[in-house]
Length: 65
Image 1 (cartoon, rainbow, N blue to C red):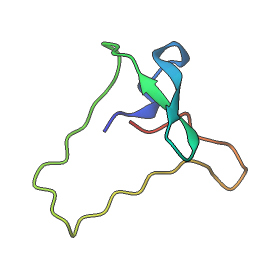
Image 2 (cartoon, rainbow, N blue to C red):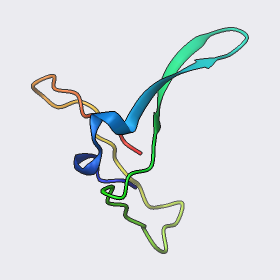
Image 3 (cartoon, helix red, strand yellow):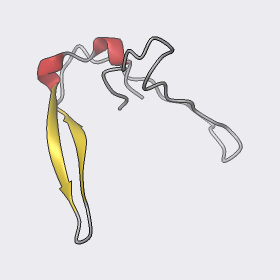
Image 4 (tube, one colour):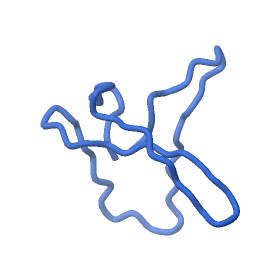
């Protein structure tokens, strides 16, 4: 997982995700040596990760990679 506080706006680009029956949007991440990545060793199907994408003030996180 990448620490979102190490991702700069210029590292991200919006991408259209087109399907036969719908169109969606996602974000692509371009590599940057400043990104801080974390590995979760020994993770099993019983382990859960929670991704915060919005907080109680309505402020959205920049993304989770």
